[in-house]
Length: 59
Image 1 (cartoon, rainbow, N blue to C red):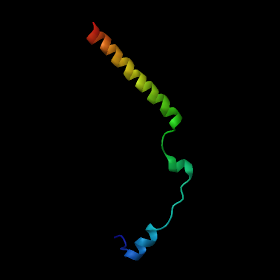
Image 2 (image 1 turned 90 degrees about the vertical axis):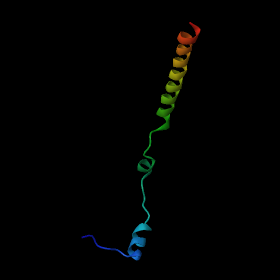
Image 3 (image 1 turned 120 degrees about the vertical axis):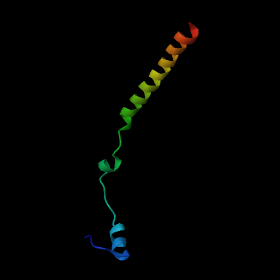
């Protein structure tokens, strides 16, 4: 059975500060790679819409 803690004990454990190294705090993807993914994705959508317009509406 787990021990029951009163409000004083909980307050002490919740107020402790955690120090996290910068590499672990970021934990996201790096932006220099994401800009290429975004650029190629937008270019692909533009090309797809141009091809759809050419083959479906113009012809």
